[in-house]
Image 1 (cartoon, rainbow, N blue to C red):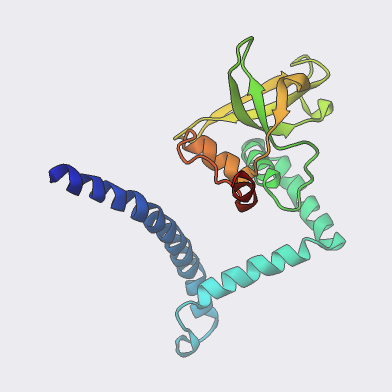
Image 2: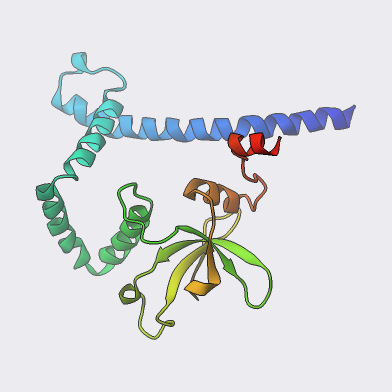
Length: 206
């Protein structure tokens, strides 16, 4: 009886916790935006015109407008000009460049010059790990760091934030038929989640 109760409690937790954590993260982002921009709106307009949620709406609108403007040549040049000041600051330039490069890698408008998700062989064994190609241009890889045909691959660790950036020859990697989202979820959970079989493949098996 106790085993039956415990098994169902665990099943309930596994089902509910991801939903709760996702909802809480969205709630925290919404509350943070409302708190930060709400004070600014109240400072600019009378309190009688303020309504809860205006801060969040203004934040989403501002992000959307910035996204639209970044498609124009003038704004792109102005933004690049402003970045040059950040790149000259000793400490800020390192942090900013690393964060910007990371988000540019996952940007929907970023140019992907190589298959992102790959499997990398380990030594002379049959073991392979899933990784993400982060750099393929030789001129952007430190000199004397590897061979001319080498690429940089990020190998994430499971159940934690972290990983290794390794330089491997192109012959050591194989493209994997997975999306970035599927690969991240697969490696984060050490393969526990598995991969969902597309409905078309299920029909073929039948």
